[in-house]
Image 1: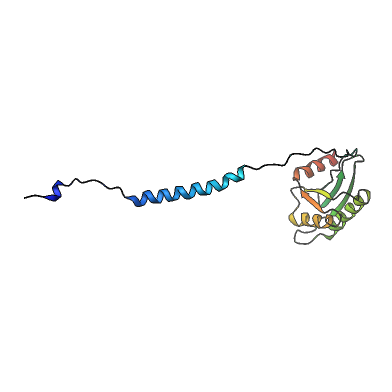
Image 2 (image 1 turned 180 degrees about the horizontal axis):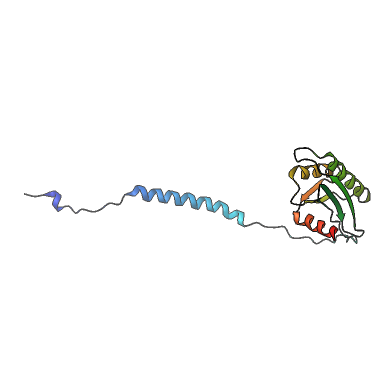
Length: 168
């Protein structure tokens, strides 16, 4: 007589598992992002103005450049400053598979002569023309490291410009 199932209202119950998963992910995200808020509030100490003694000497910009002239490597060490100058050595090129000891000695000679004039200078910019190989770059660095401790590599365009300057 009475059908209980037909009288009950059928209500759709949402699946709570995906909703709880989403809320859990959001809660962890919010907790983690709150911990990073403290990193954005960096307080710097107040700056203190101090007067540094002004140096009347122009800082040196020491560069050693190498380029190829037929089968000879031309190595030129030059600098600017209150007394600009340059030193040049030439070395016969050896095959790329061999270590060029003459190149190492030439660079050592140039840096030693430079270091005698400027004992406080420790930086050097090194550039090679594009037709010199990796072994020659390493040989130049090995030769310079005895006197100058900070060596920075620069573009080969500097060496190419140096080569065109000497040809003119």
